[in-house]
Length: 517
Image (tube, rainbow, N blue to C red):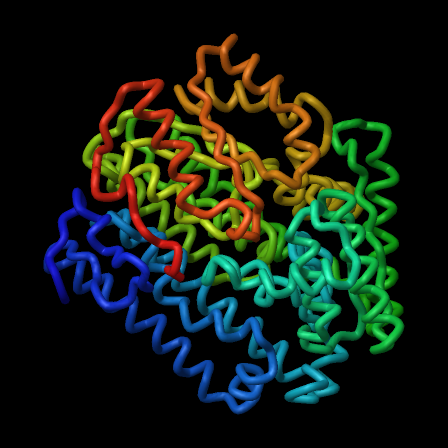
């Protein structure tokens, strides 16, 4: 298995100037064998995926497909330092996510006019935005909701840090502003470069978070409708989603979107199918609440980046439609409860309990495992995981419409960056109290106006509440602006200069991952 490395020397896994691919972490015989078995599983999923001729064609047709060579390395980065049940929790999550993404792409390429050209399948597909809830498809059991941006942009950057830089450059060469959020800019760049698969009976776009997302939607809608004849619906969820006065409008937007899908596909909304998904979605929410409850104690079990990435998939993209995810949730809860009863810890020493707030650096989601392994900072929960946890109706059609409107108003990223002062600033200190946190790691996304405009208020309120506040500056999807090493330095300087602490694992304090996946 290569050089034996204990949890205290994880930095030795990094080779200066090279990609991490030759040496694997030694976790003891049992855990190393288990980890290797999951590596084989993921390689099997990738191998089976590449046995399909449409997927092979896509590999050579779409530039972003090359990033999927890094799937095993992405999983390794997010399981660094884990042992026992914590390792099994992470792999339970990632096994299912890898399989789901592979299935999503296989459907995309089969329906793609450039590759598979399966027109019957294409007529059953509704295109969804990257950060959009998928609940509108729960009532259409014969249709498939697919987000083209998920594999092309969102997942690509998880796998390879500079995956979408060429598309950001394309968008700026086209004339778009360079200071807009890189996520919608990258999505627009993929569209401008004609690097999206072409399929679908219609598209539901939404005003996800900001003016940048609406700009990107406009460019993509022009390409979809004008060049490919795919009609688009703009679902405009209210920005001030906490106010009672906007809820009727929000519900009407859901009704209009359902009618649009019915008109475009010929399918009719099925309440029985929807309520079946709603029951499963509620069951998944109850499992997630169990994990969050454990994180309020001295022995949290399901935390950090693994909680965040898995929550985004289950809450937003799956939405109760796939039974396998509920089965996985129950398995995770069982493993977590077993470790909780034994008072098992994720790293040898817990020095600080942190809430991770703000919009995360998409090109460095394994920053959170680095926090816990290097400094003993426990990333209990992040802003993107603290989405709606209320139950939705399982039998009342009228209430169900308002519940769906609530979910679309509280989509990931959107539910905190919009809605007023309370949800972004005041709720942070409430969560610090709930989770007994003494520290906040606050992502400062340079291009996010909603967060950057409140910098001073966060600092003032942190002093009032006696919370240690560390700013981690980034540019979401463009590591050329703020490299991963700079993010780590933000923490290193604070921990050494302000708190006068030494790292838990000194080998991780300074690592060379500039050329890494």
